[in-house]
Amino acid sequence: MSTDRVWFITGASTGFGRHLAELVLQKGEKVVATARRPSVLDALVSQYPADRLLVLKVDVNIKQEILDAFAATKDKFGRLDVVANNAAYNVLGELESVPEEIGRALFETNFWGAVTVSREAVKFFREVNPPGVGGRLLQISSISGLVGGAGLAYYSASKHALEGLFESLAAELDPAWNIKVTLVEPASFATEGIAKTVWVPAHPAYSNPDLPATRMRNGWAKYDPSGDVKKAVEAIYNVSSLSDPPLRLVLGEVAFAYLRKKLTALTADTNKYESWSQNLQKDPRA
Image (cartoon, rainbow, N blue to C red):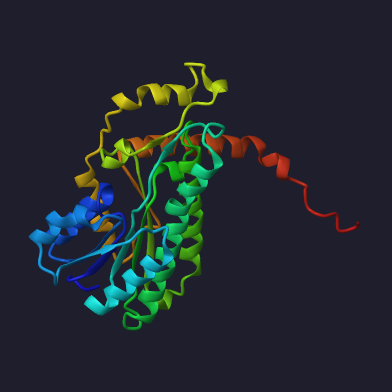
C-alpha cells in the first residue's frame, strides 16, 4: 500500500473523526474530510494545502451527498486507500422512553449512513483503484456493538447492526480485490460526542433510583472517560497499515473489561444449556 495514502473520513468535524483527520495529515498523507458543516474544518483548511486536504459537505443521511463526495474524491485524487466511517451519535434513554421516530433517526445516521458509505467504498476500491490495489474500510463502532447497556438500547442496537453487517461483508469480499475490513470498538474516550448525546425524558415507570439506566442519567454529568482519544487514533492509524489487519480492534482497558465480562457470561450460558440442543435433529425414521 502506498505511503502517500488518500483517506476518506466521515464525521470529520469532531471526535474520533477529527482527531484521525489531524493525525493522518500530520503523517503526510491526504485526507478527504467530510462533515455536515464544513466550516468547522476551516482551521485545517488554513493549515494544509489543497493538494493534501479536500473538505466536503456530507450528511450521511443524504445519499446523493455521499455519491457526490466519492465522485469528487475520484476527480481530485484519482484513487482512495482508506475509508473511515465515523459519523454517528448517541441517544440516552430506556427503550420505553425513546420515541420511535428518534430511534429510527439514529439508525438512519449510525447504520444506514454507514451502509451507503461502505457500499461506495467497496465499489471504489474494486473499480476505480487499479486491480488488486484494494483498500481499507474502517468502521468506528463501539464496545456497545458487542455489549448492550442500560439506557443505550438504540445506540447499542445500531452498533450491533454494524457489527453483523461488517462481519458479513468481510466474508463476502473476494480476496483478489484486496479489500480489508476492520471494526474499531472503543470505550471510555473523551470526545465531543459525550456532550452531544441526545437525552430523552425518563419513562415514569423507571423512576427507581437504583435502576442502572437511572444511575447512568444521574451520573452522566460527572462521567470522566479514562482514555486518551489521540492515543486511540494512533492505534487506528497503525491498524490501517497492517497487511493482515484484524476484523475487530477493541480499544481501551474499559472496553476489554466489558468484553471479558460478556464473554464469561456467554461461555457460562453456553456450557450450561448446550445439552438442551442435543437430540434436536429430525428422526430419520419419521
